[in-house]
Image 1 (cartoon, rainbow, N blue to C red):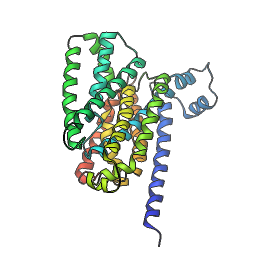
Image 2 (image 1 turned 135 degrees about the vertical axis):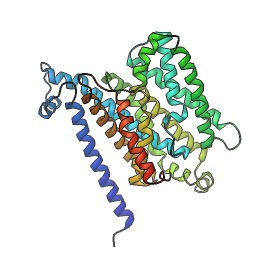
Image 3 (image 1 turned 90 degrees about the vertical axis):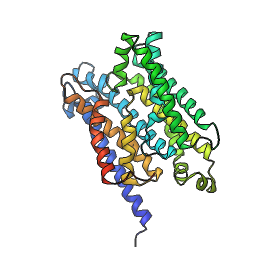
Image 4 (image 1 turned 180 degrees about the vertical axis):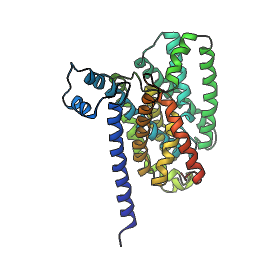
Length: 339
């Protein structure tokens, strides 16, 4: 009789392979489909033997490859950050914005636009990441004060309070600076358009560090899901475990938000889809979230390019339209999966 654990591992590994194959197909679609459709044969030729005199090859190498890479990196980061933050807060409705990441990134980008005159996406990345990091540290510090340390409920309340305060500051600046509002609104809606290779290169070290911390915390999150007392009895240092997980969220979500805007819906819905397959084990939940999130993001980006030609619908709008019915269906089919 086959070992149930071994059979489960085989099934879940097969699922990862299938999702990875689907992601590969989404990458090809992202390279081929746009305002100007390019045959797959030309796409493969541009990847293997690019011709600098070919317009189609230039579109692929100069525009669509960087855009697709940013989508892969940002999607994986949002999905992984969502899985971690739902685990560390033990809140199935938690998303990366709960620690004030989006509010902090948004405020610092508005400051950069309005007071420092920065207009390029490359500059947004650094200010967005700095704002996300400072805000997350502030939320964690506030949530750690008092008896019980950084409990999930205290972190959520601190995040909500800080988010409300920062959003007020952001609104106050925007209503007095029309030019800043015009630039900020394109970042705020979430998009992959116009992202170059330099954005991906700048962000890669932070994403690698965040991914390493998140995967390292998988076993700790499994223990924390049983409660602080049980986790402590298993030898886990609860405070250190939460600190590592929070650091992973800051690095992943702060960087991804800076790259593509606040696409928070991905971080909310993807872990639930993954958990429906893997169960609450974060050792499987995280890899599934890392693959499913960029799959959704790239498909949404392709749909956004097709439905409004020759223009496009921002990917943040499309992901919400696609993801909302999926999330409602999951919530209605069964209670939200246990964390």
